[in-house]
Image 1 (spheres, one colour):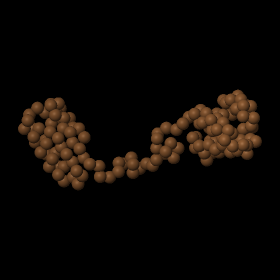
Image 2: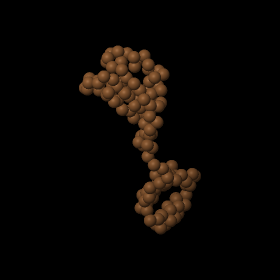
Image 3: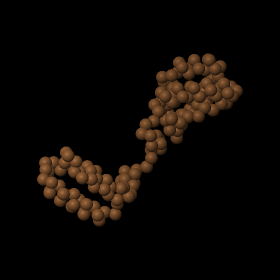
Image 4: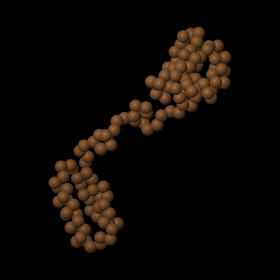
Length: 146
């Protein structure tokens, strides 16, 4: 915590302010430290937090992003799906594939990547079907080998 005492030049006034602050903080149950006035008239103090912040008490971690604050775009997830399809087909034998993903990702694939899907099907020699599931988060998907 930094307190700015603008234009307080009198050394006696500064001492009184520090004594008053220290006296008031002596009653505080949290550990506090008050530092001397800086040349710019600033008083720095620290106070150990004893309880969770109000934000922590009133909120929870986002289930969509896991507390990161961001999620992958539908485009990014689309390309992850394409890579996973290629990896799965190389590793396991399957006649066709089913991809289950969020509706936003499936919509992006069917609307904007249909040519890429056709190329991938031709390259792999497998048919790929997409199914949206509203229970899936945007970053979540499954590639099912059939």
